[in-house]
Amino acid sequence: MSLTLATPQTSTVTPALAPREQEALRHIAAGCTYLQTARHMGLSKHTVDAYLRRIRAKLGINSTAEMTRLAISLGL
Image (tube, rainbow, N blue to C red; front, side, top):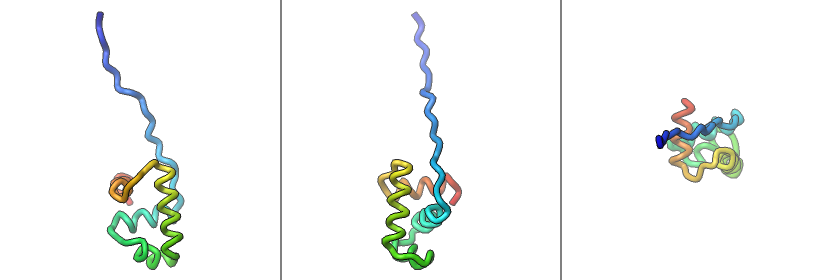
C-alpha cells in the first residue's frame, strides 16, 4: 500500500478593500496611531476604527501585526 501526501488546495483570495480602507491600512502599517491616521485622512478616529474593524472582519485578522503583514504583502 502506498500513501501519497497532498497539500490542500486552499484559495487565499483576498476580498477587495475599499480605497479608504487601503489608505487607513497603509497608515497603521506605517506605525501611525488611529488619531494620527484620522488627521492625515481628514476623518474622526471613530471612522478610522470602523475602517479597520471592517478590514479585520473581511480578512479574519485579529491583530495590528497581522494587518501590517497584510499591508506589506499587498505592497501598501
